[in-house]
Image (tube, rainbow, N blue to C red; front, side):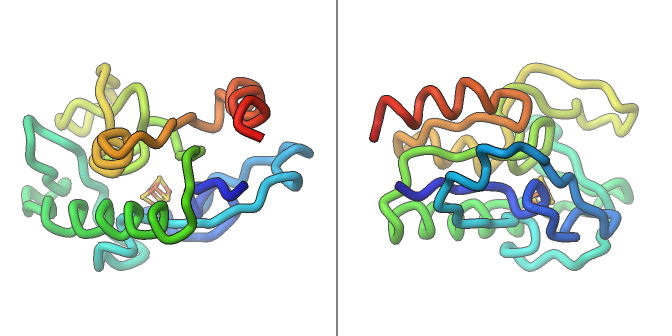
Length: 147
Ligand code: SF4
């Protein structure tokens, strides 16, 4: 079974600052992984100006709206899910694209609030179960129930 995983969690340097969030967990090797980075897939460069969700828009730190790029990236992630018949995703916590439980509040003050990233919102509409990198045990348990 294939699992969608944030590219930055797999060590790809696609974060806004050109870094990654590599997750080291033995069981990741058991997964048949399809990676995605919705922000790059949506047309944004690496590095890029960080962005946060404010109400239903995504604005970068300079006040430029980048909602369309985030939505394009979300649609690309959905196309991967549909192409590979994916039911589970492990995505980066707190991201305005990939966050599944909390996101930054739009003030660029490192303040987290309950909420979901743009890609997670779309994937969940289509029935994908989304975990983050702090929920790997739960993700593996869930995957086991599907196998
Ligand atoms: S959009 Fe997702 S995959 Fe891309 S850098 Fe941000 S958290 Fe990682």
